[in-house]
Length: 288
Image (tube, rainbow, N blue to C red):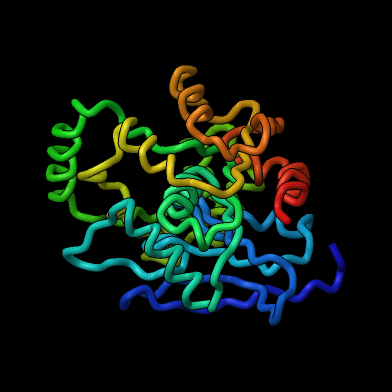
């Protein structure tokens, strides 16, 4: 990557009245490909920062999903639904004047990438999945209990937790994800917290911790996934999250545009933060 690559600019984009934060590298004309990076649940766009120095000089776009990172929260009376994240992708593309883009998604971001590619095949040139291969909605019989859980969760006040320091917030991240390296946890905490009551709190909306009232079961997800027509790449950490063998086999077989076997790189669920150069190399070989 050239040393003098243009820096990323920070701006906010309107998503039907909600402000979405993006960082992007503007490039005019028919230049390098536009690549939109989508982070995981409760993360933010800076989770991809370790990868960026190793990438080609693409037209980069890094989005904070609604209620995460620096993007706006839905506010009182609002809730978050999976389809909202697809709207965030469309709003980001529209707001930056991009007719089409390659999508790179980690975890939740990968699920959103596949769903958006299925719904808007004319706008997605390829999808790169990092530690992601669809949701874990479960069997149809779980739908009723999920709805009950959503209603129960709605009565919990959306309280923010205070941490004494950024380092304490990073330590909490590692408690939830022991494979996350200390440096990666500090990066996530440094960019994902703000001053709060004499300490710090995470910037994500605590309403995100409430369970979805509706989710795709396996048959519904496979029906959505069948709409994907662009090339798809799967990158996995050797010690990452792996669905049940039968689910993995079924989903891989249901992706006819999958470009070869999964690329397995040493690391855990945040393999792109643990092995950024290797992940960047896999992306650069795939995205054209």
